[in-house]
Each structure stands twice: as C-alpha cells, then as structure tokens.
Amino acid sequence: MAAKTRALDVLAGTDHEVLTYSPSQDHFGQHSVDELGLDASAVFKTLVVEGPGGVLAICCVPVASQLSLKKAAKALGWKRAEMAQPARAERATGYIVGGISPLGTITSLPTLIDASATALPTITVSAGRRGLSVRLAPGVLAELSGAQFAEISSG
Image (cartoon, rainbow, N blue to C red):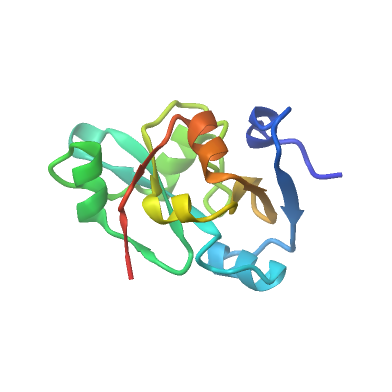
C-alpha cells in the first residue's frame, strides 16, 4: 500500500491510480518516466513560480517540455514570472522538491496545467512524495486543484 500524503487524501473517492517507483535525487520527472516506462508527454512535472510582489503559483507541464515563464506570467495576469526558490516552494506547498504535488498543498496557490493535458485521457503527477505519483484524468486534477488549463509550455 502506498504511503499516505495530503495529495492522496484529496483524491479519496476519485478514479485514480497510484504509481510507486524508486525515488531519485534529481531529474525527478524524467526519472519517473524512465522508472515507470511512461510517455514523457503524459507525465507532468509540478513547478512553483514567483511573480511580482512575491506571489506564488503552481504550473504543471509535461516532462517532455519546458515551462515558458513568459506564457505562465501572461496566463496568470502577471508582468513577469521566475522560478521560486526551492525552500520557498517547499514552505508554501508543504512538499519537498521532487515530490511537490498540485494537490493538497498547505497554501492554496493559483494553479495552471498545460493545455496539452486536455488531449490526453489521463496524466501522471506527483502524489506528494518522491517515488510516488498518481495517474488521473486531467479534468479531475483541474477540479480538485482549482487549476486552469493554459498554453504554458515550450519545446
């Protein structure tokens, strides 16, 4: 049985699949793709960005792509965005880098999911711990995380 996390608590009663694999210390998204044999366009990494005045947001983009900070800022209505410092992201979400999930964060943050997710029946995101992911429908993820879909990736 998978470890309990706040992300998995949020998923109680929903259709989802918990996936476990050996955790890594870097390249977390690509590591999960490699370990689980998944399509990198259907595995989404969770990134925390910072905007003007120190406001934070979550962006989920495919492992096969990069986050466009310019597109993310525009979608959030910000003038600019940059990657949040890891320690700040961890404090805001309650998760450690490499295990940050868009679900069950301790601080409610605006959340964007790359629009490419809408063409997929399921996507995989972190379930709140390194080595623990969850596969679910993109619409379910958006509903439970309060996310909006937007074109925020490049490459």
